[in-house]
Length: 574
Image (cartoon, rainbow, N blue to C red; front, side):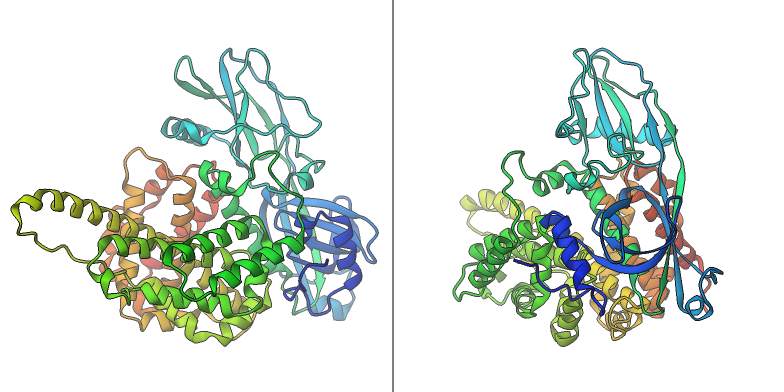
């Protein structure tokens, strides 16, 4: 059974190419294809060849027009830059030259040369990052000492013997963001990835050190000439690369990786029909009347876990608007305050409601992530602007929690006070988690409008429009203040490197701050005037460099974004 129609693909979809891809790719890889488009390709091996470029969530392929073979040319993990070049290629005729989009992809084609000294009793680790220097080595050591459990066993590749030796510990690794391992096997540089270096930890001496490696780097370029003024391939490439960077960073968190990657031997064959049936069943159960909060929480968690592992569920989520509206209405039922009067006094019940809301917001964030190609998503958001407005207000408003009341019975006072303090601490912890998840979802929504600004999607969505709406909402000031406070806290913790999840959250916080500074005069003035001291003493580049490990794929994008935020803060008010 074929996958659902690819509504996000170019209007002149090539049914022959689509059928070819369905035959040549594994079902889970085919479902993860983001876009394809004809173009003129120039590289070391391609000399102005007219081919189709096919973009998946991890790889860039080339195939002939008409398609005969499928060749993998670039892995997103190796991409260093994607640029749109303003030029007029001489090899194109005059009309094509005027409407041409020249996309340049710079990627690493380095080779890893071994030469290492074996250390008895040493354990070997692999880290996915592209540029190793003295600072990154210190980061690796610090990360290990902070969290030794973060380093996990590297799965043995099919058909390849283990690289461990009798006198060396087992080889372990953080995931590099690769979920379609089959697709990467055989890809140039996969066996010894240019973005991996070896790191050893000597358990006997409680010391960490990098193995002596000779990393020979080489930058290559792939040029794509798209003969169209309306093509969104460049934006799809940028978006997919950004999505990959975030996912690759999160996969360095062991808990996130365990949730995403199946236990070896437990994975069933991928079948789109089964995923579609599973989604339909979950949706039907969610819509049942008289569902308890616990039942709703279980169903939403199941939906989130399934969507994490299967992109097709995200596509099905946006096919109609009913589930999106259902989840937003469910949030509105409990936020910012509960409609159930009992929850106004019962802290335990309020804690359960907040936990469910956090799960719903996480699920919505997951459905927004990597679905920019889905025109049905834009259709839903355009048709249900009321639900979108409600969601935005919910995200920037702090949830209300029950207040503590004095207990007058002296025999019960001590025990009640202890339980009360415990529940207060639990509620505060949930509010902090809620704020982080709300920040991540707001980031995804801002991306929708930013992409609309750049032409990826409907022109009805513009970042200035949503910022105008947000600045009209009174809670936005407190929300921005909480983001600044969290950034200060994240950059001020002594001797602690940020975890992968914290690093991604920091990137999202900077993106929101940049949007406020760039597209809202009111919020920009507020940030510059009311948070001048924070940016002067706490939020600065040396603090970021101390907290953000260079081995995270998201470190370089975060650094660039941080510099842009600082420049906007320092701009004189006009």
